[in-house]
Length: 378
Ligand code: CA
Image (tube, helix red, strand yellow):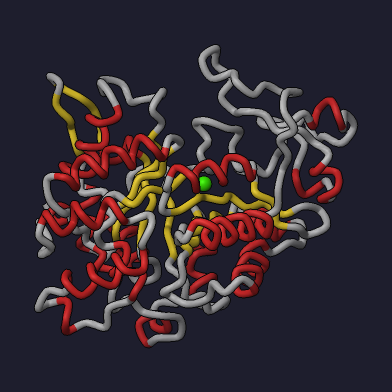
């Protein structure tokens, strides 16, 4: 399996360094990079980000923060994801009427806020759009958990003081926590519905890249991924907006061969649903598609969405089983998760029996903006 080949680090070294990973990331990274270089790697221009991520299999992406524990996308949820140790913390981004970037999953506010009670006359056909409200108005709302099952109704509407926050606040929070804890957690930003935004005279991609640049994120080695479902927008981000940051093309279902080949010329990774990898369970065993190996053939690593400990796919017994199938059998390099601690625990357990190096070499040598390869494909 391409994603699970044993690396060159000896197990003892990795086990010892893993214990100190949180406290001394710079030392560990430097030592691992030095030891992990294979003859093949040494001929390449190794990106520090790529090298740094190579031994984190699976990469742990906190989906809407630690959203299995706290209302999604709140700063509390992001802070808890950071404390749990997620490698990257996700921010879905939408723009308000006055152009502010806020961290919300939907372009409407109905599912996770009390907008209907606060602004009963501002809806359109029962939907309240973020584009129709100013930041001050969005701020006045209270955020609650999306999943309101009996088990997860911990923060219903009206309880707590959870608010919508801006992307800038999330960046400041994560950078601040990185400094105060000596860690280097990254951002994983999704541009939501760019076409709808543009129809309202807004351009979230441009605004996001500008804000990221203000906070020092602008090159391939910076600790951020940009993701979007819209393939046209992803191409625009890479070419017209000249973005050099690692990009992720998202898919709602298994991508076709043509889609993967096209994506491989533009982006670094694809984000695909669990159901596109694990198509079923038969006689207690997984039925896995070929999508991840096809993505690897297109020079793409795969981040799978979304693991949630209390909502496992039909036939799956527990999180550990699901993660073994997705990562060890399937070859996933990263997992979006509502419960980062569960995936981190899984990673620690599998790394105890030896290092796993993912196919991050696939990201090396990717064309940057303005390269011949990109120009010819525009
Ligand atoms: Ca997302």
